[in-house]
Image (tube, rainbow, N blue to C red; front, side, top):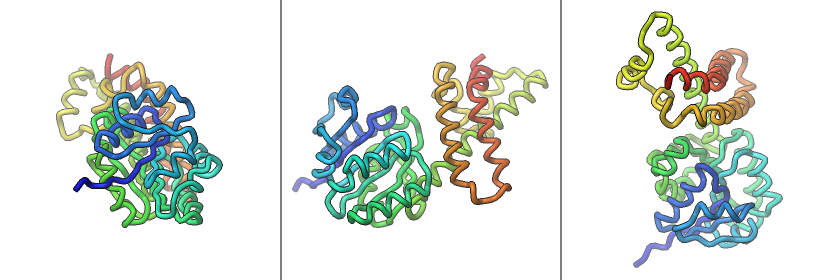
Length: 279
């Protein structure tokens, strides 16, 4: 017997969303897509999918709908004003792959409960390359049974799926992950400043640390995934993430400020850091 797979809807065909959606279709899931601009659907060329004219039309035929948009207001607009939640059948699942506030994730789950729709906040880490290579990390918040149901879908584009807790926990995990990455960028910048003053050959030092116990994803990415051509853009995105993080931790007191400021400094220094590493 042929296994019946859930009908999967996809909204958001950007840098990460498009290769994730392609992976879903390649894994054999019936894929449905909606895009504000029809030209965006070209990113799905070569894989089977059904396009829809409206969000509500897509939602009416899907068991799971993944939303991969850039910020919380866009997700809210699609889910509520756009009619996605109202179009989904009771028991359907809305998965938010964007990075946003944990409080909004909890709010969206509460809003969806009135429609008897389940919500998972499931931001991803690994960038465009990770999405293309189907090796993303998914950090998930929501009901455990719903996570078990959707986990095989996540496996089509991810190698690690971590269920971190209830609604909002996935967003919290992603923000913590991003903060550590940026703090490590600042650590590298300060270390290279010291190394330069000591007269060490920086390119050779970078390669030695990459191969040694001091390595990190932050260091591995410099000059590779992060280049002089995209560092300014990535720095701006990192600062947006840190603005979200600052709001998320606002109630924890002043003792968390040092980590926040270090991570912000790491985001700001990224273009200079890449230039220094690449010469």
